Image (tube, rainbow, N blue to C red; front, side, top):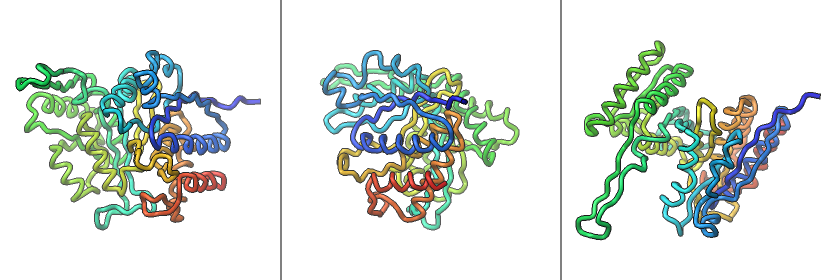
Length: 354
């Protein structure tokens, strides 16, 4: 008898609605695993703000080591109203991204069935943002001096390396080559005099190696406006850590809801586990009410399955989501009346009937 393929995935439900949407995702993934001949060994980690209140930190001191032998990490949400965001993010999410060199943050966006874009006449948006994920503007280099005094100042350094820009540009160029061949680079080289011209030079030199890829370098403020006015002009966008973060949220909103968008924190060489998470927050205002939309978590799980080498299961999960939403089953945030359990049960039925 052939032994089923087994993947070890660490679960960090985290905070707020993460505690509700992560279990929904695991049920759907298990159903897909049964249909496609593999299994997932889930390792649940009770890390997050509750862990912080008990231990004074978001995860154990050896948390990175604990996760290091897994195949992937499925994360729910991080954030608590009684903790500063920099405490929760830099205590859990960002260390995982950096220690595991998850230098690609992949954020696909499209309009799902039944979701209405706020843009008139837009119903088929399909854009992927490739965000540099471990350096750029989100560095820990800097500090504050003379705290509380009139002379107090804060210094925050952006860090751009040739290695870092090259690898994200190469990933984006390869993705663009597999799609339409159109690649847009977000820059601000007219105002940020050192890092952004460097970014432009490195991205341009990398893309020269890809004959079928056409590169456009666009100032980030003009790009934000163009995405609203002419979203169909764009396919793959590559951006620095800060610009990619902002633009991907904007595009998700243009597709109808930031609350259903996924992301993948990828270590392309697969030297370390990659991490998959929705881009929504912990939503403490609705946590525990059973009304959270699990779509972003499910979509993130689909990205995880594809990364693990199960493309048929990944596609089956997205087909099930599309089928359920096309049938009008939607949660309250999208104008529907379904709860988390209702939506998850409908996706499970779609998976079972596929």
